[in-house]
Length: 305
Ligand SMILES: [Zn+2]
Image 1 (cartoon, rainbow, N blue to C red):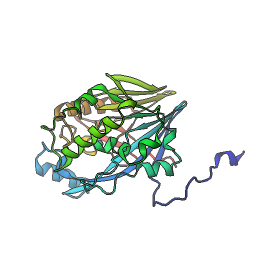
Image 2 (cartoon, rainbow, N blue to C red; image 1 turned 90 degrees about the vertical axis):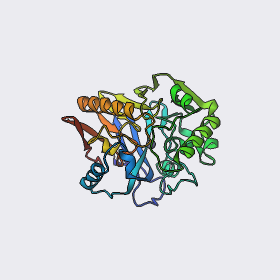
Image 3 (spheres, helix red, strand yellow; image 1 turned 120 degrees about the vertical axis):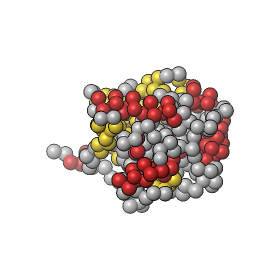
Protein backbone atom coordinates (compact mmCIF):
# COMPACT_ATOMS: atom_id res chain seq x y z
CA UNK A 1 0.00 0.00 0.00
CA UNK A 2 1.30 3.41 -0.91
CA UNK A 3 0.63 5.47 2.16
CA UNK A 4 2.36 8.51 0.71
CA UNK A 5 -0.41 9.35 -1.75
CA UNK A 6 -2.92 9.57 1.10
CA UNK A 7 -0.92 11.95 3.27
CA UNK A 8 -1.05 15.64 2.53
CA UNK A 9 1.27 18.15 4.10
CA UNK A 10 -0.62 20.69 6.22
CA UNK A 11 -1.21 23.85 4.16
CA UNK A 12 -0.99 26.23 7.06
CA UNK A 13 0.17 25.96 10.60
CA UNK A 14 -2.94 25.52 12.75
CA UNK A 15 -3.52 28.68 14.74
CA UNK A 16 -6.91 27.84 16.22
CA UNK A 17 -7.89 25.42 18.95
CA UNK A 18 -10.22 23.60 16.51
CA UNK A 19 -9.98 23.79 12.71
CA UNK A 20 -13.72 24.69 12.43
CA UNK A 21 -14.28 22.66 9.29
CA UNK A 22 -15.72 19.23 8.61
CA UNK A 23 -16.03 17.37 5.31
CA UNK A 24 -18.70 14.93 4.13
CA UNK A 25 -18.76 12.97 0.90
CA UNK A 26 -22.04 12.63 -1.01
CA UNK A 27 -21.31 10.15 -3.79
CA UNK A 28 -18.84 11.94 -6.07
CA UNK A 29 -19.49 15.33 -4.48
CA UNK A 30 -17.47 16.77 -1.60
CA UNK A 31 -19.31 18.92 0.94
CA UNK A 32 -17.22 20.95 3.38
CA UNK A 33 -18.89 22.69 6.33
CA UNK A 34 -16.95 25.73 7.58
CA UNK A 35 -17.89 27.68 10.68
CA UNK A 36 -18.08 31.45 10.27
CA UNK A 37 -18.12 31.69 14.07
CA UNK A 38 -21.03 32.17 16.45
CA UNK A 39 -23.78 34.74 17.00
CA UNK A 40 -24.80 35.51 20.59
CA UNK A 41 -28.54 36.25 20.26
CA UNK A 42 -31.36 36.79 22.77
CA UNK A 43 -33.41 33.65 23.38
CA UNK A 44 -36.75 35.38 22.77
CA UNK A 45 -35.86 35.15 19.07
CA UNK A 46 -36.22 31.36 19.21
CA UNK A 47 -39.97 31.58 19.43
CA UNK A 48 -41.49 35.00 19.83
CA UNK A 49 -45.00 33.49 19.59
CA UNK A 50 -44.30 31.04 22.45
CA UNK A 51 -45.18 31.67 26.11
CA UNK A 52 -42.09 32.81 28.08
CA UNK A 53 -42.51 29.85 30.45
CA UNK A 54 -42.47 27.39 27.52
CA UNK A 55 -39.32 29.01 26.13
CA UNK A 56 -37.67 28.86 29.55
CA UNK A 57 -38.64 25.18 29.90
CA UNK A 58 -37.07 24.32 26.54
CA UNK A 59 -33.86 26.19 27.41
CA UNK A 60 -33.66 24.38 30.76
CA UNK A 61 -34.12 21.01 29.03
CA UNK A 62 -31.29 21.91 26.63
CA UNK A 63 -28.99 23.12 29.47
CA UNK A 64 -28.88 26.52 27.77
CA UNK A 65 -28.87 29.90 29.52
CA UNK A 66 -32.24 31.68 29.71
CA UNK A 67 -31.23 35.06 28.26
CA UNK A 68 -28.90 34.48 25.31
CA UNK A 69 -26.73 31.79 23.77
CA UNK A 70 -24.36 31.37 20.84
CA UNK A 71 -25.97 30.28 17.56
CA UNK A 72 -23.69 28.52 15.12
CA UNK A 73 -23.14 30.13 11.73
CA UNK A 74 -22.23 27.45 9.19
CA UNK A 75 -21.20 27.98 5.58
CA UNK A 76 -20.76 25.19 3.02
CA UNK A 77 -18.33 24.67 0.15
CA UNK A 78 -19.34 22.07 -2.46
CA UNK A 79 -16.93 20.58 -4.99
CA UNK A 80 -18.80 19.03 -7.93
CA UNK A 81 -16.91 18.24 -11.13
CA UNK A 82 -14.86 21.29 -12.07
CA UNK A 83 -16.95 23.67 -9.96
CA UNK A 84 -16.28 25.02 -6.47
CA UNK A 85 -19.50 26.36 -5.01
CA UNK A 86 -19.70 28.54 -1.92
CA UNK A 87 -23.11 28.33 -0.26
CA UNK A 88 -23.64 31.53 1.73
CA UNK A 89 -20.81 33.71 2.97
CA UNK A 90 -21.17 34.33 6.70
CA UNK A 91 -21.56 37.63 8.52
CA UNK A 92 -18.55 39.67 7.50
CA UNK A 93 -18.20 42.69 9.75
CA UNK A 94 -20.57 45.41 10.94
CA UNK A 95 -19.29 47.83 13.62
CA UNK A 96 -22.90 48.59 14.64
CA UNK A 97 -23.73 44.99 15.59
CA UNK A 98 -22.12 43.50 18.65
CA UNK A 99 -21.18 40.18 17.01
CA UNK A 100 -17.39 39.99 17.32
CA UNK A 101 -17.07 36.20 17.16
CA UNK A 102 -18.55 35.72 13.66
CA UNK A 103 -17.07 36.78 10.32
CA UNK A 104 -14.26 34.21 10.30
CA UNK A 105 -15.10 32.66 6.91
CA UNK A 106 -12.36 34.17 4.76
CA UNK A 107 -9.61 33.23 7.21
CA UNK A 108 -11.01 29.73 7.61
CA UNK A 109 -11.38 29.21 3.85
CA UNK A 110 -7.68 30.05 3.53
CA UNK A 111 -6.81 27.69 6.39
CA UNK A 112 -8.76 24.98 4.50
CA UNK A 113 -6.64 25.64 1.39
CA UNK A 114 -9.50 27.24 -0.54
CA UNK A 115 -8.46 30.28 -2.52
CA UNK A 116 -11.24 32.80 -3.22
CA UNK A 117 -10.17 32.82 -6.88
CA UNK A 118 -11.02 29.11 -7.12
CA UNK A 119 -14.70 29.71 -6.30
CA UNK A 120 -16.72 29.42 -9.55
CA UNK A 121 -20.21 29.86 -8.06
CA UNK A 122 -21.87 31.30 -4.99
CA UNK A 123 -25.36 30.16 -3.98
CA UNK A 124 -27.30 32.36 -1.56
CA UNK A 125 -30.03 30.82 0.56
CA UNK A 126 -31.18 34.40 1.19
CA UNK A 127 -29.81 37.92 1.57
CA UNK A 128 -29.69 38.37 5.35
CA UNK A 129 -26.37 39.81 6.45
CA UNK A 130 -25.21 36.62 8.19
CA UNK A 131 -25.40 34.94 4.74
CA UNK A 132 -24.00 37.65 2.42
CA UNK A 133 -21.81 39.78 4.73
CA UNK A 134 -18.61 37.83 4.03
CA UNK A 135 -18.76 39.01 0.42
CA UNK A 136 -18.75 42.64 1.60
CA UNK A 137 -15.49 42.40 3.55
CA UNK A 138 -12.77 44.71 2.17
CA UNK A 139 -10.75 43.05 -0.58
CA UNK A 140 -13.03 40.02 -1.07
CA UNK A 141 -14.72 41.14 -4.28
CA UNK A 142 -11.32 41.92 -5.81
CA UNK A 143 -10.04 38.44 -4.83
CA UNK A 144 -13.00 36.68 -6.45
CA UNK A 145 -12.91 35.88 -10.15
CA UNK A 146 -14.63 38.36 -12.48
CA UNK A 147 -16.69 35.58 -14.11
CA UNK A 148 -18.07 34.41 -10.73
CA UNK A 149 -21.77 33.46 -10.85
CA UNK A 150 -23.91 34.30 -7.79
CA UNK A 151 -27.19 32.37 -7.80
CA UNK A 152 -30.11 33.86 -5.89
CA UNK A 153 -33.90 33.59 -6.25
CA UNK A 154 -35.43 36.43 -8.26
CA UNK A 155 -38.02 36.84 -5.46
CA UNK A 156 -35.21 37.45 -2.96
CA UNK A 157 -33.59 40.18 -4.99
CA UNK A 158 -36.98 41.83 -5.54
CA UNK A 159 -37.88 41.59 -1.82
CA UNK A 160 -34.85 43.59 -0.70
CA UNK A 161 -35.79 46.55 -2.88
CA UNK A 162 -38.46 47.37 -0.24
CA UNK A 163 -38.21 44.76 2.53
CA UNK A 164 -41.06 44.27 5.01
CA UNK A 165 -39.97 43.68 8.65
CA UNK A 166 -43.47 43.99 10.18
CA UNK A 167 -43.72 40.32 11.23
CA UNK A 168 -40.11 39.90 12.40
CA UNK A 169 -38.86 40.26 15.99
CA UNK A 170 -35.20 41.23 15.92
CA UNK A 171 -32.90 43.00 18.37
CA UNK A 172 -32.62 46.77 17.96
CA UNK A 173 -30.43 47.85 15.07
CA UNK A 174 -30.79 44.60 13.14
CA UNK A 175 -33.45 45.63 10.59
CA UNK A 176 -31.37 48.66 9.54
CA UNK A 177 -28.17 46.63 9.38
CA UNK A 178 -29.86 43.90 7.30
CA UNK A 179 -31.46 46.41 4.93
CA UNK A 180 -28.18 48.18 4.40
CA UNK A 181 -26.12 44.99 3.91
CA UNK A 182 -28.59 43.59 1.34
CA UNK A 183 -28.55 46.89 -0.55
CA UNK A 184 -24.74 47.12 -0.55
CA UNK A 185 -24.53 43.50 -1.69
CA UNK A 186 -27.01 43.91 -4.57
CA UNK A 187 -25.14 47.00 -5.79
CA UNK A 188 -21.62 45.59 -5.45
CA UNK A 189 -22.39 42.29 -7.20
CA UNK A 190 -25.00 43.43 -9.73
CA UNK A 191 -22.98 42.06 -12.69
CA UNK A 192 -22.39 38.63 -11.10
CA UNK A 193 -26.00 37.91 -10.06
CA UNK A 194 -27.82 35.04 -11.82
CA UNK A 195 -31.44 34.82 -10.72
CA UNK A 196 -33.75 31.81 -10.87
CA UNK A 197 -37.50 31.47 -10.29
CA UNK A 198 -38.06 28.23 -8.38
CA UNK A 199 -35.19 25.87 -9.07
CA UNK A 200 -31.78 25.86 -10.72
CA UNK A 201 -29.13 23.18 -11.24
CA UNK A 202 -25.89 24.94 -10.28
CA UNK A 203 -23.62 21.96 -11.02
CA UNK A 204 -24.16 18.23 -11.65
CA UNK A 205 -26.07 16.98 -8.57
CA UNK A 206 -26.31 20.42 -6.94
CA UNK A 207 -29.76 22.01 -7.19
CA UNK A 208 -31.00 25.16 -5.45
CA UNK A 209 -34.76 25.26 -4.72
CA UNK A 210 -36.80 28.20 -3.51
CA UNK A 211 -38.91 27.55 -0.39
CA UNK A 212 -39.93 31.07 0.67
CA UNK A 213 -41.07 31.55 4.27
CA UNK A 214 -38.01 32.82 6.12
CA UNK A 215 -37.73 35.41 3.34
CA UNK A 216 -39.76 35.37 0.10
CA UNK A 217 -36.80 34.05 -1.89
CA UNK A 218 -35.32 31.77 0.81
CA UNK A 219 -33.87 28.68 -0.86
CA UNK A 220 -32.35 25.34 0.11
CA UNK A 221 -29.69 23.34 -1.70
CA UNK A 222 -30.07 19.66 -2.62
CA UNK A 223 -26.94 17.61 -3.20
CA UNK A 224 -27.34 14.17 -4.77
CA UNK A 225 -24.80 11.74 -6.20
CA UNK A 226 -24.49 7.97 -6.48
CA UNK A 227 -27.62 7.31 -4.42
CA UNK A 228 -26.49 9.59 -1.55
CA UNK A 229 -28.38 12.75 -0.67
CA UNK A 230 -27.78 15.78 1.51
CA UNK A 231 -29.87 18.92 1.96
CA UNK A 232 -28.47 22.27 3.08
CA UNK A 233 -31.51 23.90 4.67
CA UNK A 234 -30.20 27.44 5.24
CA UNK A 235 -32.53 29.11 7.77
CA UNK A 236 -35.53 26.81 7.21
CA UNK A 237 -34.57 24.87 10.38
CA UNK A 238 -33.20 26.11 13.72
CA UNK A 239 -32.16 24.04 16.75
CA UNK A 240 -35.48 24.59 18.50
CA UNK A 241 -37.40 23.65 15.33
CA UNK A 242 -37.27 19.91 15.98
CA UNK A 243 -39.10 20.13 19.32
CA UNK A 244 -41.17 23.18 18.39
CA UNK A 245 -41.48 23.45 14.60
CA UNK A 246 -44.36 25.94 15.04
CA UNK A 247 -42.32 28.49 17.02
CA UNK A 248 -41.70 31.68 15.08
CA UNK A 249 -38.05 32.67 14.73
CA UNK A 250 -37.45 36.40 15.08
CA UNK A 251 -35.66 36.61 11.71
CA UNK A 252 -38.60 35.15 9.76
CA UNK A 253 -40.32 37.70 7.54
CA UNK A 254 -43.40 35.44 7.08
CA UNK A 255 -43.28 33.27 10.22
CA UNK A 256 -46.43 31.24 9.49
CA UNK A 257 -45.23 30.31 6.03
CA UNK A 258 -41.75 29.63 7.47
CA UNK A 259 -43.28 27.15 9.95
CA UNK A 260 -45.17 25.39 7.11
CA UNK A 261 -41.95 25.19 5.07
CA UNK A 262 -40.07 23.80 8.10
CA UNK A 263 -42.62 21.08 8.90
CA UNK A 264 -42.88 19.96 5.28
CA UNK A 265 -39.08 19.82 4.94
CA UNK A 266 -38.56 17.96 8.23
CA UNK A 267 -41.27 15.44 7.29
CA UNK A 268 -39.57 14.89 3.96
CA UNK A 269 -36.09 14.52 5.48
CA UNK A 270 -37.43 12.06 8.07
CA UNK A 271 -38.95 10.00 5.24
CA UNK A 272 -35.86 9.95 3.01
CA UNK A 273 -33.31 9.57 5.84
CA UNK A 274 -30.91 11.82 3.93
CA UNK A 275 -28.33 14.02 5.64
CA UNK A 276 -29.19 17.54 6.74
CA UNK A 277 -26.85 20.49 7.21
CA UNK A 278 -28.22 23.89 8.26
CA UNK A 279 -26.78 27.33 8.92
CA UNK A 280 -27.62 27.71 12.60
CA UNK A 281 -27.61 24.11 13.88
CA UNK A 282 -24.63 23.32 16.13
CA UNK A 283 -21.43 22.91 14.08
CA UNK A 284 -20.80 20.84 12.00
CA UNK A 285 -24.58 20.44 11.81
CA UNK A 286 -24.42 17.15 9.93
CA UNK A 287 -27.16 14.75 10.93
CA UNK A 288 -30.53 13.24 10.15
CA UNK A 289 -34.12 13.89 11.13
CA UNK A 290 -36.44 11.42 12.87
CA UNK A 291 -40.19 11.96 13.16
CA UNK A 292 -41.66 11.71 16.67
CA UNK A 293 -45.43 12.10 16.59
CA UNK A 294 -46.15 15.72 15.69
CA UNK A 295 -42.56 16.80 16.31
CA UNK A 296 -39.06 15.75 15.27
CA UNK A 297 -35.75 14.61 16.69
CA UNK A 298 -32.27 15.67 15.54
CA UNK A 299 -29.93 12.70 15.15
CA UNK A 300 -26.32 13.94 14.86
CA UNK A 301 -24.06 11.99 12.50
CA UNK A 302 -21.24 9.96 13.99
CA UNK A 303 -18.12 11.94 13.14
CA UNK A 304 -15.91 10.30 10.54
CA UNK A 305 -12.40 11.33 11.56
ZN1 LIG B 1 -29.26 33.18 9.25
